[in-house]
Length: 224
Image 1 (tube, rainbow, N blue to C red):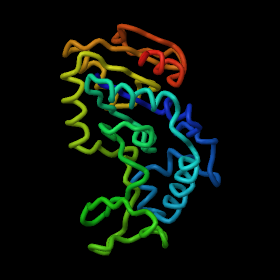
Image 2: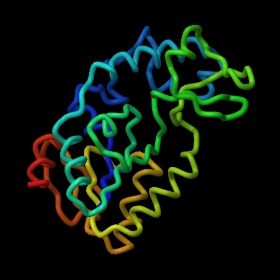
Image 3: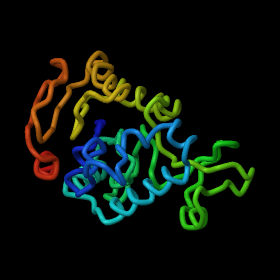
Image 4: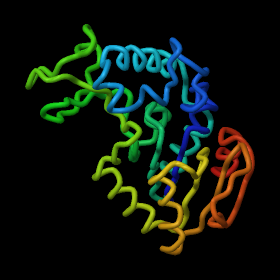
C-alpha cells in the first residue's frame, strides 16, 4: 500500500496551505519567494521567510491521520508514504518509509557542492548561511517553483506506485505536477485508487473509491 499525501493533510495539523499562507508576508506573495530567481535576487529575504515558516511548522503536531498511516505500517502490508509536504510531520507521526517529493524544510542544500545539511541550529546563526565544506551559500532543502523534483525521490515514487495494489490519495488537489502523474501511473499498473479528501476534487476518473472527509477522521477508521 502506498499513500500519496498533500497539503490538506498538514492543514489539519494547523500548517497553513502554501497557496493560502495567511495571504501576504511583509507585502510579499509566498509564491513569489519560493523561486530560484527570488533567492538569487535577495537570499536573506527568502531565508527570513523560511525561518518564519519553520516557526509555524514547529508549533504543529502530527494529527490522527499521520498516526493512522504509521499504524498501517506497523500492521502491514508494507506501507510507503510519498508526500508533497516538506514539514516532516509524517516522520514525527511514526512513519519510517517516507519519500519527500518536494524536499524538507528542515534541511539545507549547498549551492556549490550540493551537500545536504540537517543541523539547522549550527548553520542558521547568520543569514544567508554558508557551507562549512566549500564556503558557498546554503539554500532551503526544498523544491521551488520552476525546479525539477529530486531524481532519486521521483524514481523511487514511480517504482513504489507501479508495484502497489492500493494507492491512498490523501489531502491533495491532484493539480500539482509532476506528483499528480503518480495516480495514473498506479492506475495503469493495476492499483485500486482510494481518494480521501476534505473537499470534492477531480482525479480524472482515476479514483475507485472516494471518501470525502478529514484524513484525521477517515484514516483511523480505515485502520480499524
